[in-house]
Image (tube, rainbow, N blue to C red; front, side, top):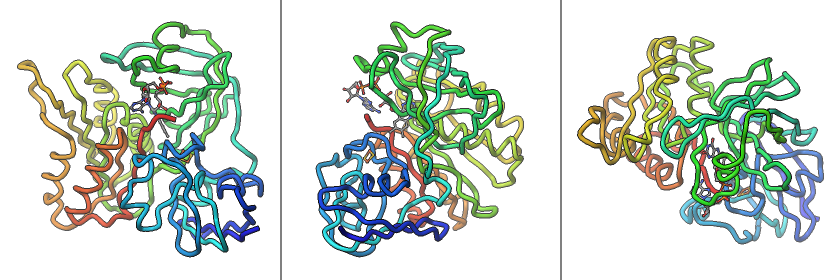
Length: 338
Ligand SMILES: Cc1cc2nc3c(=O)[nH]c(=O)nc-3n(C[C@H](O)[C@H](O)[C@H](O)COP(=O)(O)OP(=O)(O)OC[C@H]3O[C@@H](n4cnc5c(N)ncnc54)[C@H](O)[C@@H]3O)c2cc1C
Ligand code: FES
């Protein structure tokens, strides 16, 4: 057995033993601590951490979930990390994100399902259990009715006491959950919800500006964050950039306008990559607008929250680092297939 010590950002320590052939994620669960994770097979990136000391083997994983440069600097996926001796690692989240009673499993009813743009739908669920508390940025897994298939989705709303979960979901061609939503799902359907879980979320860092960059439905957890800021009337200046491919893909404008109306200091832009003559807003990639706007802050590096497809997340990270934002101020969630 190899001893493992994990440290959270708020100084919490988790110590347990890991058997040969057991991943750190499995050993933590065996010791009663469920760490943020989704696919458990090295493809989604949700169990990212950094090894600070000790030998380990890394099992098969996708380069998108753990880019080679992060791997070279001690980045690991805990579902694919097998200690070969005493191991210490840091977790990129606070102790509160570790579940000690296992992942909550609850039943819900489909309350609404509607298209909001080409290939994008809004799904609303009502949990039977009305206690619907979660931190903006977390995700739940929805189980495809009648199967064991689960997919991760990030609520776009904030925690509440009426059991309401709202999702913005991009429909993928021939995707299993996507096909259920486009072909069979109806209000009244029953779904099993696993969670909330996950490490992505707002960090309290005083009055530092917050910048949010979303690719497509990567907006969902960021919308939850700015909605929370509006509910709590948080004073940090906040700016959000949403990137979509075509004008037909634009969505969530009423929701963003509602936040802008309630939250002084919040502004947002939707950037269309392939505009048509009718589009009068910003064009191109949100990353380019982000990089161009960074100098406006005159050295006051913002906290950056980015979510969406891996290429967008990685390019925003590169632009942020080039623009002088310290890496620990760039918080990211990659929407990868689970
Ligand atoms: C933590 C987390 C949170 C997420 N939150 C959201 C969310 O709020 N909204 C949302 O729309 N999606 C979200 N996703 C992605 C989502 O979990 C599914 O991957 C996606 O909906 C496809 O599921 P599917 O069953 O329809 O497709 P699958 O049956 O899994 O796959 C069908 C095809 O689509 C491709 N594919 C699947 N997923 C992706 C992807 N993400 N990017 C590119 N190609 C893909 C597959 O390679 C395959 O070819 C999240 C993912 C993670 C890890
Ligand atoms: S849970 Fe480890 S990569 Fe998905």
